[in-house]
Length: 368
Ligand SMILES: Cc1cc2nc3c(=O)[nH]c(=O)nc-3n(C[C@H](O)[C@H](O)[C@H](O)COP(=O)(O)OP(=O)(O)OC[C@H]3O[C@@H](n4cnc5c(N)ncnc54)[C@H](O)[C@@H]3O)c2cc1C
Image 1 (cartoon, rainbow, N blue to C red):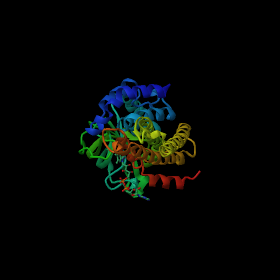
Image 2: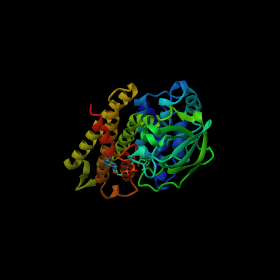
Image 3: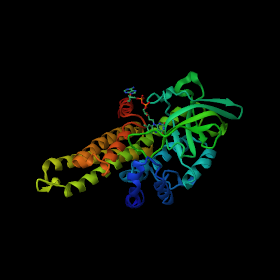
Image 4: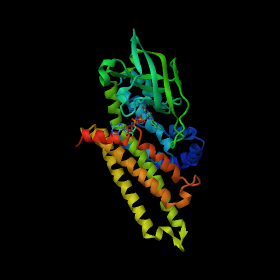
């Protein structure tokens, strides 16, 4: 029922704008409005904080169905979860009440600030600093590649509080867009997910109350990694949705397009391609849903499953979308058809929340 509801909403209110959002590289406001009106913009927020209380699998279904028509729009529910999960997992009761309520109501989105210009895969090498000053912390530094930066009201920011201790000297904070000293860089000009703003975030002597720290001092990096165990599954969901959108389009196209006097879908060479695409997609889906169940129950092998689902589903999405372009021939290579957008959008799922090389490192360290 949830899938049907989200699919109907996505097709009616999000799909019609997907090509323009990509072409004009503009924020999908229509999607945010539609998702917020239907209470689907941050479904993971627990009911006790005014949210819809969706479990990990339900959240995956929402993201998957939105990504099927517009990957940029699927970053609204996905990054709201990524940005706020540190608060859900490790925040004080006061922080939860203060920030999860407005997120659930649609009063402000959440972003997640881990990466920096010189600290990507090696995130613990970050330089952004927070220095204690009485009842305040003062933040200075630059975060890079921050999804929905400038649009979001709230930012979970990982910063060094003890440079001697490397990852154990990193703490997490909630910073608000309106805090003095917060500013944003120009939107990055990207290959795909062009409707999702990606910008630098600058912290110039940003003074925030000490109770904005998420969890204890020095636990920020652990919280950031724990968050990714859960949210990599939402990137897998995004990959599934993009791939399903491409497969659905290609399936319809091969029945219409005629060459040699018959639909190209009658050729076994084409049928075999579609069979492989559907097989890979279904395998990715099963792994992702299994990982979502593990996320919900916080099982011991979640770290392996989260990395495996993200890595497998994103590699599958890249292959499936590339094959969808192939099945449309020259038409697939143009922006008159949606599959080239899906192929460009799929690429990011192999890169963010840890590249697929990093996922393989994580899997190798956590073999089941
Ligand atoms: C559109 C977009 C949105 C993003 N959104 C966010 C966000 O909201 N918040 C956030 O914090 N970050 C975000 N990111 C950052 C993203 O997570 C990083 O780009 C990613 O982790 C890789 O870091 P890097 O770009 O510095 O690449 P690098 O770490 O420099 O990696 C370059 C290459 O080297 C490889 N490599 C590096 N180390 C190893 C190793 N040990 N073994 C094998 N290969 C290795 C990588 O796999 C990659 O192929 C986003 C990025 C993009 C492009």
